[in-house]
Image (cartoon, rainbow, N blue to C red):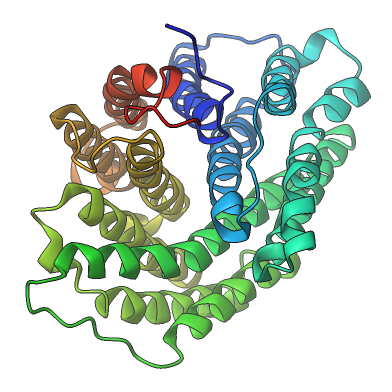
Length: 387
């Protein structure tokens, strides 16, 4: 059977995201808990943060855009050699960063900064020629590239604070994408799932734009005034608006539909994480100390897993019925988030044990995902159509 991995954009992207999640977190646990060293001179926490954002999340963003742009514009998607070149650039960046001690810093930066501009170059013609309103997402890709460039410049200057801020703003940008895209797909998929059940979707006028505006404010404040009272209040307001937006989508009615409730679950981590951020910045409450992981392990990773499992089934010509191992992956990832965020405060675990347990649950979740989706992503569509 001929390998189809470069037949459509979602295939290598979702494989890359899944493999990155499966590999990077256990390496981080080994580095943090057992002192394993990598041929990378960066502070280990910054290596971990960078690779999760620009490696794992970056691949997932690429997969979504490469899949969505043809649907939005009606134009052919990226496939074949250009797609292979894009993910060769992604893989080269992961290798360059992991072995950064072996290369001049400018070489590592140049390789790492290639991926998002190349992705933008591949999708820009379709977006711009069609006049599609989503062309603004090209600006977001540019902002991700700037964050990555600032990160590398900060490392050259040995400015850990600036590097950390660049990562924080990149995470905020990813949350902004989830707010924009999730604000469309979560209610749409929910309405489809509840069709015929006599359940009306409640929509409060203005909440969607308000949620986007709130997240833009979070991006701006974290870029300019991070860690203070203004950042806390901004996060608190955004948490409230996001909670109202989520409540109107009737997620409680979808408990029998895993491909839908996982999206509600992932989105629910956004107001929770933002509320924890507000509490941590205003009062230093111990329970809120790991608010960033509520937004990353909880919101971003869960939304990524929910979207890629659904999209891979639909775009490979398969029924939207999840394998039991997929539901297990959802549950394991939820547990990983809960342990990572609340394990120290509620479970009485030592911090190294929290890291190890959360890493085990996370890695098991993505192992379960890969066991189902690697065969799907490398084989032809089930319906015999191209792509």
